Length: 182
Length: 267
Image (cartoon, rainbow over all chains, first blue to last red; front, side, top):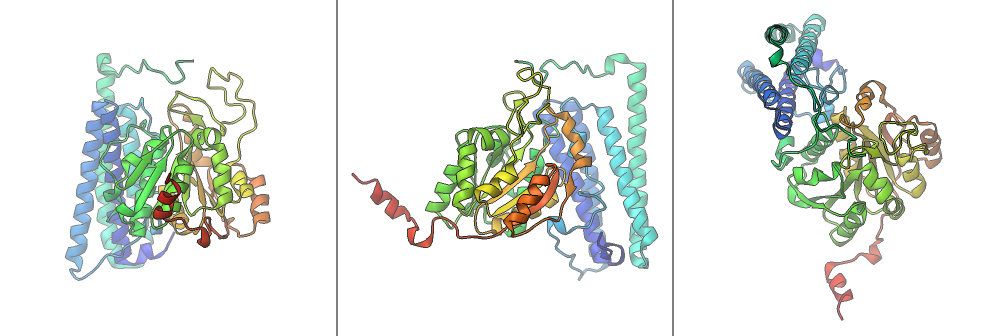
């Protein structure tokens, strides 16, 4: 990882905006896919999650402008960002998605994603020697923690509903299974 | 233009979790970095799930005949060398139905990019073994003991046939793939990118690629070194493996202009 991410306010902020915006774009893409495949429940869920990330991205952009109105955030190419993994920590990886996905699985993955984002900001807040970066990273981590808690509550509530009312359990019978026509 | 402005607005009908979404995003990111004018880019494809991709990009596109993306793309580039031509398709389209075109496109070294979204299966026809299917993959009832045939080795064959840029990307790393595309577009000559693009519907085991695909810093202009690397390769290394510009076809004195083409068809 590029250590400038931990020390330079502009580079930290540009990573934060990209992280939220990419998270929102991926969620909207998943929402659209679920709509195409007639899974209305997940379409609504991913749309709501996307809207949250998009709002957060807008808030960070506004904050960056407020911090220094003359500041221009650096313009990075997609591969020039410095993430701990191949994609940003808040991205919903394609490997977790499939056509029989349930709301419970989607929320569990969304929770993991938010927790990764929280750790990312926490790690920066702990490691940086720049007090300005620390001052920004700490509330960002708190915000991710709050979002993770909201998703965890939603997940618990869904699990309780599924336990108490079996009619709400998604029928996972695959009426058009892969490899069928052979 | 920013990356998402290169999307056409047509909603992809790929399965949720399909790796081709990552390739679509990588192309838009590469185009944004290249500041590609949409009217100067053409995406040419064959037939299959992945070959739907040109419809989803805001540029010119040609969704053509099964296995024939490369001759269309080469013809287009020869007639309109000013355009940025990217051919694409899947492993069945590119290595089986279009296998012969693949060999000769590598050999001719026309200045185009060829992206093969390799999910090791015929997805559109519901999951039969393709040229890159593992030898003992037993999930298709047509090949209950697996295809029992040695797998096609796209990168090694591209090298042997004369491709001048050879790389392998992974759909789990769209940013790395965007970088590869960025380099491939700027490479003078035939640039081949094999993309390990997971099929969560017919090959759900490919989600393991997230753990097993590994980066390799093996790029060399030396074909002997590249051959040694590719013959020892486990098929899961990602990176640019070979880059060695050589004269592109058609050579300058043969440059074909549309007016000359028309003259050739006069009776």
